Amino acid sequence: MSDWIHLDVEEILNGTDKAFLVRLEDGEEVWLPVSQIADPDDYEVGDTDCTISISAWLAKEKGLS
Image 1: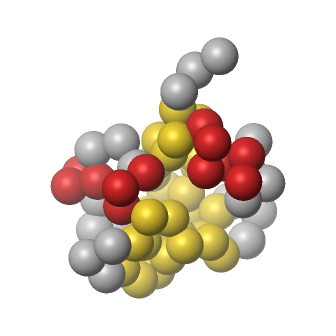
Image 2: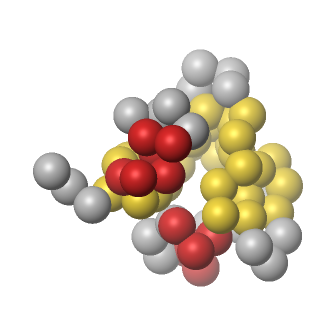
């Protein structure tokens, strides 16, 4: 099993030093901790139509996998 789950993100709506609020393609909005995102410096608020990789355990915990 992969350590990462890839999420199709419609838009990054908001962000702090610790988390991003993203809207997924199904319209669901979810906060993702920066510490659980692969290469978080590649993303910023306002990005659209991107794929964000998050840790598999977080995806499972949030019902995203």
